[in-house]
Length: 455
Image (cartoon, rainbow, N blue to C red; front, side):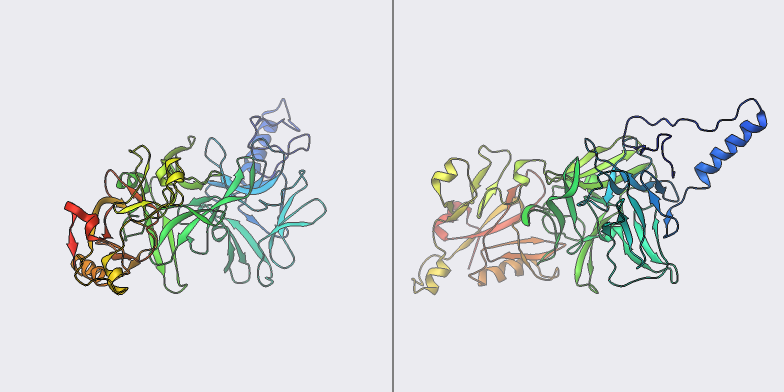
């Protein structure tokens, strides 16, 4: 509703007080009462709109509502803050939940804000002095553009002469992913700094499209969590039990754009609302609201310490059921024993016995026992796998790795095909179920009774 309180101050949906003082109330006649009711009905339904134009802008604390009533666009203050922002939030959830913020890095310090269309066709947030705090930042001017809030939660800007969409909030997300939104190598979620500060925080989430596509969370640009590769059905680095909640995900190879994107569509029940939120601590949460009730967390990316990327360093393996949780892979030893024993595992592990194929290449003895592979079951495979066609058989995968001395590990998944590694094995984790079998190349003397395959 486009309304202010009787005092003229903003009336926030995020405050506990939601009462409105009646104004101009006519008493004593049924006709007058009926007119008041009709006026209120018209005010509630006839003036409600989902569109903003240069002539039909909104000022704080006004808002617009999507056609089906699912989302609102307007001015708000976060919890424990008096700063004012323009954002989008769920309109029918018991606890208002902001899913997108326009001026997240430039808050308004009072209730003088305006959301409108500028002369060049941009959607802009202005302060009381008409200074632009935020803009949709179109590359060229557009005549008679308008902004519309859709029931998907997407805010779109379109040219009135063509009706063509020229900008959308889904391509510029904040910390929340909604159904049908596309998160890619170029479009990422960014966390709030804190629940009271929606400015861009330390964490971002998106797709790493190098080699095999994976979901990633980064902390100031450094990997913080990853999903493991996508095999056309699931992320193989997330235990299958999580897919009770993660079903509906898909990754698409957008060949025209030369990138990957992932999207989700989970429930067809209109009473259920799902979203993914990257919180200020770098945890990606799947939240669900049933019939307008408060949100419940259904899945979390960081459930245990081993989920943090590279917790045990290169050639280390993390197992949450062990104490300590980190150990070196068989055939490897701590690079810095003193640090390792103190529980600082970041320096990782190094190979204990050089590979025979490397010694031969450096004028070693041809008569030495050949290298082999150790099978590690139910593992989160390392980062940066090289892959071949899914039509490559597991036997051919093993043979190709055996023939290449620089290949230090391989794994096979029917949806991905052959995965091989030539660099350090980073972010290996032991699962109690699911995962993939990882074959690590070791010198013959390190294999013992666990020897499996050799040249």
